[in-house]
Amino acid sequence: MPTVDWARELRGRSQPVTIGVDVGGTKVLGAAIDSLGNVVGQSRAATPDGAAFPNDEAAADRVIEAIAEVVLSLDPDPPGGDPPALCVGIPGLVDDAGTMHFAPNLPAGVGVDFKARIAASVGTRRVVIDNDATCATVGEWLLGGARGATDALVVTLGTGIGAGIVSNGALVRGAHGYAGEAGHVVVDPSGPACSCGRRGCWERYASGSGLARLAREAASAGRLRGVIAEVSGDPESVRGEHVTAAASAGDPGALEVMGELGWWIALGLANLTALLDPSVIVIGGGLVSAGELLLEPTRRAFAEISYATHDRPQVRIVEAELGELAGAVGAALVARGESRDTTGAVGART
Ligand SMILES: [Zn+2]
Image (cartoon, rainbow, N blue to C red; front, side, top):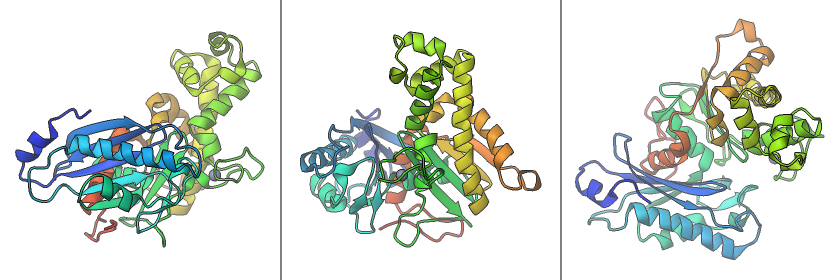
């Protein structure tokens, strides 16, 4: 539910307000921002069950309904004039027309014309569809941890990995809007199967599901005795949260697993840094709630394995400042055409 009376806020402000929505694997988050970037309303709904299955039209309908519910709770009664512009960030490859073509973490949405469907559900308003990680990148670049940087990476570590690139002062979108899929850069061709249909993608190792796998392996090898006791001795029941909780309590085995996770995160970051030479890397997503327990081993491994690490300026690795709202706030910025580069050119979708 909105934390602010959105309609009253809107009437009291002369600045245009825009709405952003971030569709994640477990929740749909919405934010309304004013022209200064202040969050003046937020809303959430659960991502409907079934969204993880392909060709499920009923599930796709429920995803659209959840998005509409979030938008309408932020803007239930627009007080005349043009309603606020809206951008929805979705987890997959989205073309310029707003149709999703590939989405390992939201298969029910593949082939869905999100732009037309959402526009039909939320009344007449301008709707922009963009990639969720691209939206989070815009948010952190303009208002968060990468503020002022000409070259930055924003990496969200959740169920999978989302990423966005700022290079030479501009958001990198690629020829088709598909740039930044760093989670599916292969780090081990013989590694575990990925939801994208290939093997050994970075997100199999350095995401929430990667942590769960490392934790199960450590538990099976008898390295997580304290955690194992909590789950009745079954290594297969060990989840990532068990490890982060045990690590924050100082459990040596859990700290070792966090170190392994940090190494895998650092491996991908080092590869991206060799390619793109950022000055700052912003880490967001659910995993970053572990804070320094995760960032410290990541920085340490990054310094050890980066290319020419002693002969280049240090890359700052920092936590996302906008927290779980990075994607929604970034989407609201995209909605008003604010994925500008530092020279003023606009990289937003229209
Ligand atoms: Zn993959």
